[in-house]
Image (cartoon, rainbow, N blue to C red; front, side, top):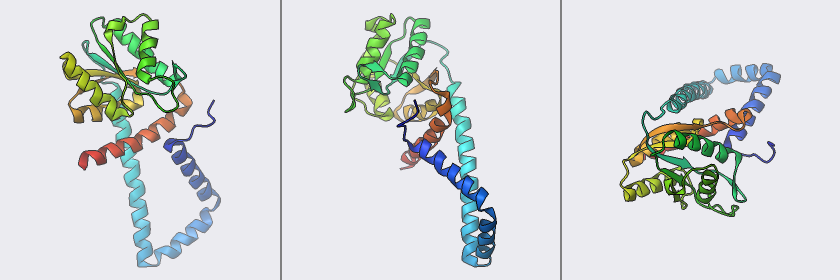
Length: 234
């Protein structure tokens, strides 16, 4: 069911589609308008600036997409602490996206019997229990020993997921190196944040639950990554 999904990725995609449709239907009028605009100095400046912005946007998203794909390939070579990033909980059960992250985490924990897992996610206003609690219960149901699962149930975003998890790693005397279980498209941004707070991060990729929404996920990540770049500069 796709109804009710409203986010920056969808809004951007719809806006671009509407713009392209408008250009297709009104290209003659647009061409005439641009030719009139080009006759004036300020008009030339505006056209050149708009063209430069479009070119910059294409180059930026192409480079970022390449980095996002590369980050997904940065899988761990040896057992590491596993951090599972939270996502929506429906009632007391993981949402489809969170379940995919947990299934990837389960496979990793089964293959690496000595690895400790930190499930990270607080309780939203529309959730009955914290994401961490739902994640721990799900992994225990699948057969993971509860002693291997540490809950971090205060975070509300990716930065808090990772910074709070690092505090737990310090308390447990764990190395600042971790495999992050999240969606593949989210790995690059998670890695940027992890690097900023001092965690060397590898990727454990969840299977994308709704492949039809991949373009939306990537567009939303473009904006999220741009925001992280700005934060890094500031």
